[in-house]
Image (tube, rainbow, N blue to C red; front, side, top):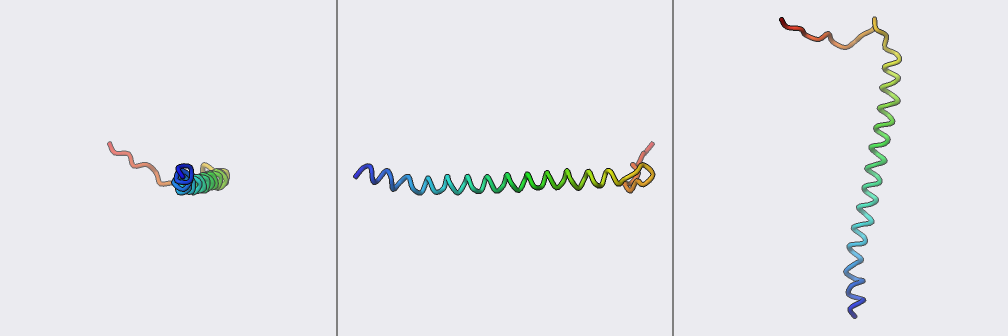
Length: 63
């Protein structure tokens, strides 16, 4: 009887652990895809930009 009670108590904990692991893996995959997209697209923007084609605003210098 004691073994069955322990087994029944462990099932919800095992399910929570398994679900948490799945959520963590999904989050890591999402972060990796964001980093890869950022690397791909920001490098494409930087290679297209020439020094004479600067679209960033000039810094404000106050004296």
